[in-house]
Length: 309
Ligand code: HSE
Image 1 (cartoon, rainbow, N blue to C red):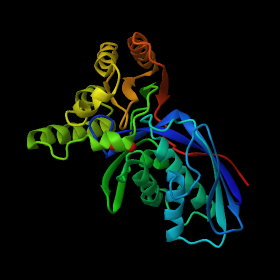
Image 2: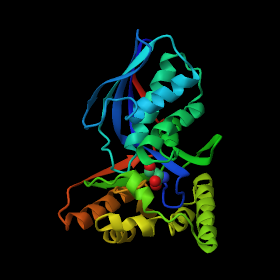
Image 3: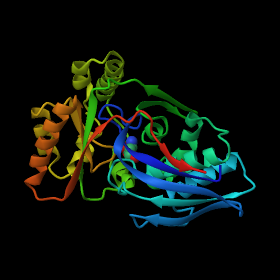
Image 4: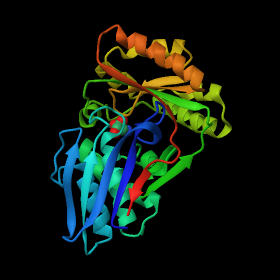
């Protein structure tokens, strides 16, 4: 294979009850990346459209992740990367994760797939480290593996792909302000009480169980974040109002997508998802802020190959 063009989807991390460990992959929103072999060894980012991002490989998450995979598997040829960004940086739906995951996925294909998709997570995480100040895998894992993923450990990387009911739908609302993950992480307190920790691991464990048993009521009771949401929701316009309207409209849960400002709801079935999306839309419409809203199935495949030659 000499070159590959891929669709790299957006993702929702944390999912209320699983800060830094839980995530799922979205279907309709994503970047397109082209990666091709070149004669000169090394990595070159030749073009980025849709966003103003650095072409310098040391300052770009795709460049950092690409260098990470090549440091483990040196190649006699080089790689040129083109990125067409549709996922806005600082939107909370895994923009940096998509660039990092896309770069390592594409290069792995071009060098004959020496690494499993699970192995690629560690390289993509290095790109995330550049974007947020600390590597985490809760966005790159669902982008690479598809579906819902649980990060049991980051060192060594140990990620479990989880089942989910096919009726499960996500609604993602992106209020168009930029919130840098680095900033949204800096504001977090470093310690929590034992009481809160107990509540949180109870909720996370129950949510995982609900995914296996397809128990929507249990899912709904478990989609709670008593730790991070109170610290971050103040950064998001009308968070409480939109949350109330989504829950009143029948959402299984509502929370911050990744580090925000996007917010998400989960719904049982597409009809419910439409009702919840329209409630969220009217609630944010009132404040006159520009936003985008998407209804999505859970993307069980992750990255898709558009073409290769
Ligand atoms: N778990 C991460 C956070 C996701 O909430 O900071 C954003 O990259």
